[in-house]
Structure formats: structure tokens, C-alpha cells
Length: 359
Image (cartoon, rainbow, N blue to C red; front, side, top):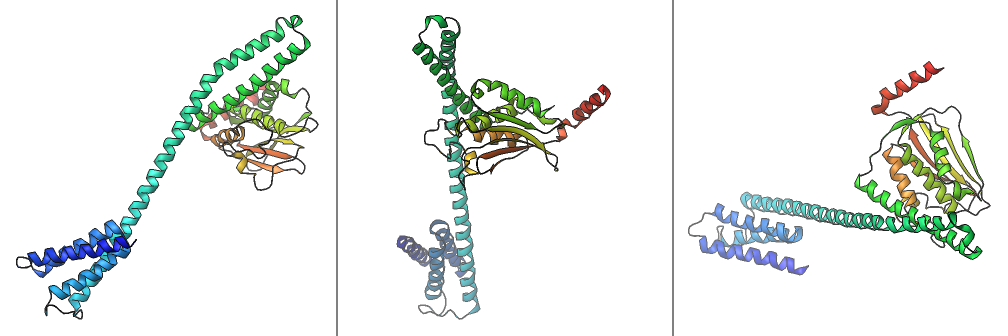
């Protein structure tokens, strides 16, 4: 810290020596410019405090060595006061600009570093996901073959082991798919292809895909009747519903009921929800659970904490939002979808006309 002030004083000394050497050929105005340059250099290099010290010392050196009467201090004239004011303004202005530029440069460097880290992580996750999918598919296929083609040749223990291999490989495949989907979403590779779709069909498709995992669970639907079609990418919204149901399965007991439903809001929004009767989300973590790699209750729960963050990214890409409401007991995950889409307005009119003709 003190070294900056030492260099400020040294700069003024150098300006004084140079000015004394050039004094026979330089006017007082030219000498003043040399000191102004020293103040500017100090402000740019060492900041506001040292530059103000340099400005005060420069005015004192000018008055003592170059203004009549020489070798005495007399800063009473208006020109001396004006010179001091100018140097102080220059010192404060240049140092302020320098500090601002330095902060902007540091912020830009930080953002660039974060972007590079994120790019490398996404590349690594994508490569990791692709490399794992082939052996996982092989393991799943082999386990399925054992269970379906020659089950009579397996003992009870072997059959149980084959089931465990199949289930765990399938679960790991879902983790890998989530990793790959997240990297694609963040990279903008996944494009949302919206079409007007009935939300009840998307819910039904999601439940069908999860049928094997819902065999021992109590799950009900509560779909509002006569809901209008909504502009969505059915594949992506189906993935959102699957992830929410999967999350409910992880954080509830087999005896806890799960409900999937939909409702129409007054503000041209369709809301889809997945609720359960488990322990709910801890207070204060309602927003954190949608962050990448965050899990509210990591103990004994498998997964990487990506399912809900993928849900958030997909819903936001549709112009909606996703949130949690604690039911006490249980939690209710809700996401909204706009009923209107400017780009699909013509298609919506055509669908409505076709519907009216069919009636």
C-alpha cells in the first residue's frame, strides 16, 4: 500500500528533475504539462490516493521551482489555484476511470473463465454420457434376454440377480440421459418444436412409459375436463412429467400416494402438477432444488440432482415457470404452460375450425 505513494512521490521528483533540465527551453505552460502527465500516469497506474498526493506535490513543486518568486511557497494567485484544481480534477477523473476499467476487465476475465469451465464441463459430461450409453444398452439387453428368452434355465436367485441388473442398468441409463439432456439444453442443441397438443395425452404417455416402475405404487390422475390444446413440444413436456414422477418415487415411501393432474388458470395458463404425501421439501429449499447437482435430502437417495433442473430448463423454454408448494404432508410440484403462442396462432385457428366442423 505504501509503495504506491512512494512511486507517486518518485514520479513528481522525476517530473521536477526533467523540468529543471528543460527549463531554459520550455515555458511555464510546457513545464506544467509535464507535471500533468505525471499526475495522469500516477492516476492510471496507482489509483486515486497516490494521484491526489502527486497532484498536491506537483503544484507545490511548480510553485517552488518555477514560479516567481523562486524557492518559496506562494499559492495565493488565481493561476496557481486553477492549476491545483485542474490537477486534482485530472487525478480524480483518471483514477476513477482506471478503477472502473480494471473492475470491468476483471469481471470480463471472470465471466470468460466461468464460461470456459462450463464449456469444458459440458463437453466432459456429453462425452461421458455418450460413452456410457452403448455398454448400458448392452447390459440391459443381456439382462432382458436372460429374463425373457430362457427363464426356465435360471434358478430363483439367478432370476432375482438378473432383475437387479436390469433395474440398476435402466436406472443408470436414466441418469446418463439426464446428463446428456442437460448438456444439450445448455448448449442450445435441443430445439423446442411446438405443436398444439392435448395435455391429457402427454400425461397418459408419461404414465405409460413409467408403468413398470408404478406397479407397486398408488397413483391417481386429476385432469381438468375440456382443457384447450396447448402449444408444447410433447416429447419434452412428457420428460418433465416423467422426471417429476421419478422425483416423487425417490422421496416417498411405497405407501405414499402420488397424484398427477392439470388445471386451467384465469391468466391463459395451463398448470400441470405432480403431488405426493411424503415428507415434503425442507423449508427454504423450494428454489434450490431446481439448481443443478442440488438435492434436498442426499442421504440414501440415488441420482445426480439433474432431473428437476432439466424440468426447469424445459418449462422455461416453453415460456412457463415451475415451482413447489408444500402440502403438509407431501409436496406438490407445479409448472405452467401458456395457452397462446404467437408463432402458432394460425395453426391454432385451423385446429379450432377443424374441431368445429367435426361437431
